[in-house]
Amino acid sequence: MNISMHFEGYAEKIIAEALRQGLVKTKAEALRLGLLELNDKYGLVATDLEQKELEQDLAEFDRMEKRLAAKSTKLHHAKSIDEIFA
Image (spheres, rainbow, N blue to C red):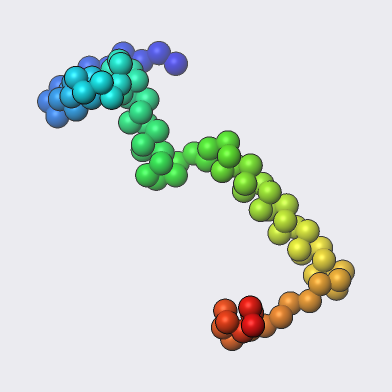
């Protein structure tokens, strides 16, 4: 996707300083870095690793539900964490 953008004021100063300090080589790289930071802060889109871990967790939950339904595994109720690991 190609986009033409014009920045002024505060945003322009941030990009210029990032370039000056060598944090980024181009304005486009500054924008990409900003988008990645936005995603890190708000979790807008899962990374490939996060998506893979989520799928593995969901598969494990499915396996646990099947074991519980087949009564091959029992749930143990505990009043505290210490009781679980005692």
